[in-house]
Image (cartoon, rainbow, N blue to C red; front, side, top):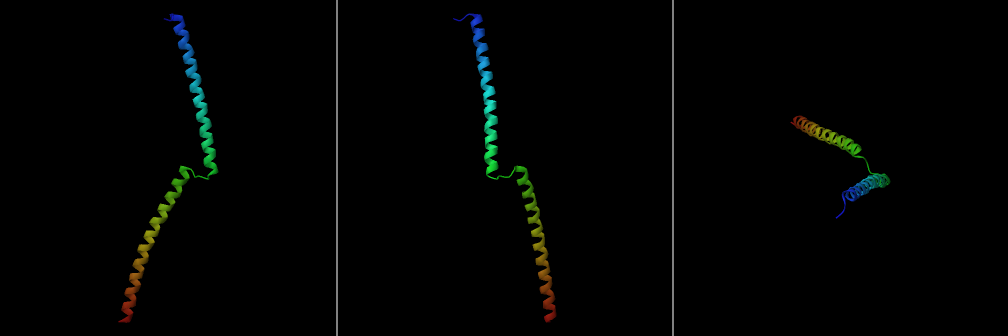
Length: 88
């Protein structure tokens, strides 16, 4: 069995190793994140915010299109009714 001082020293050494490993993982995470961002920039990928803005604009345009289609149908019906009255 190890003595108390040896056990304490072993635990201190393990804590240093764990701390170093955690720091290395943090550094690695930062490097991987930078690499992924660079890769996505090369692909010309849009940000989520930009995508959401364009999606909102597209939704508004679609709603306007539906509104205009309804107005067009109403005007066409009115025109047809007027044409029928003129024929009589």
